[in-house]
Amino acid sequence: MTTPLRAGDQRSDTDLIEAWKAGEEAAATELVYRHGKPLARFLGAAGAGVREDIEDLVQETFVRAFRRIETFRGGSSFRTWLMTIGSNVLKDAWRKRKRGRVIPLDDREIVDGSSDPHGDAVAGDIAMRVSRCVQGLPRLQRDVFLLRAQQGLDYEEIAQALDTTPGSARVHYHHAVKRLKDMLE
Image 1 (spheres, rainbow, N blue to C red):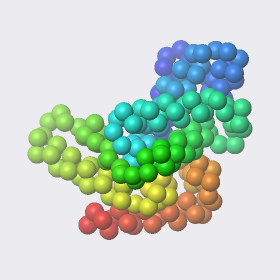
Image 2: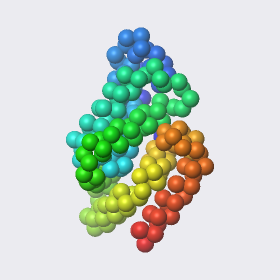
Image 3: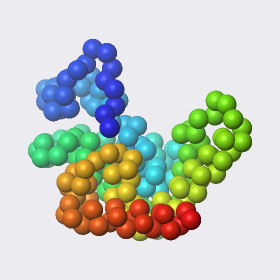
Image 4: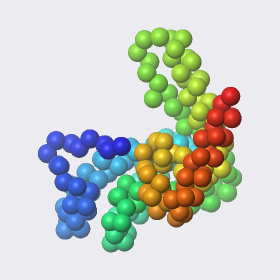
């Protein structure tokens, strides 16, 4: 799933990274524009909490990414690399909290509220149930499921992002889908 580019900047992520290294601040802005919302959706669905927490985690992820940009080798996409950093930022935040309490993300934004109030209520209820069920998955299953279903990453990219194997990613995804089906029935 690719975020549309703003008019005027058709450069690849790799070209933007090189431009930023050469001192072009607008290149970093374009990378944030392209990847900020998908990163926020991933972190929110992974249990980051309220909007302010998600914004802080996204910001921290980009800060870490730009500080370590020299370690990006291009073996995976920039987005996959960024999701890996985001996952680590989220783990660090959970360790700092030590409470382990997670506030579910409010998914009302994804519900189309244009026409049918009853349909909207049903869709909102379903979205809340799915969100709660996703939150109830074990961490690795949840992360694999979100990277696959929400971000559209393939198993190789998921394996790189979560430091596992593609086979393991497939198994975790399969178990996550099965668990979600069982929970939603």
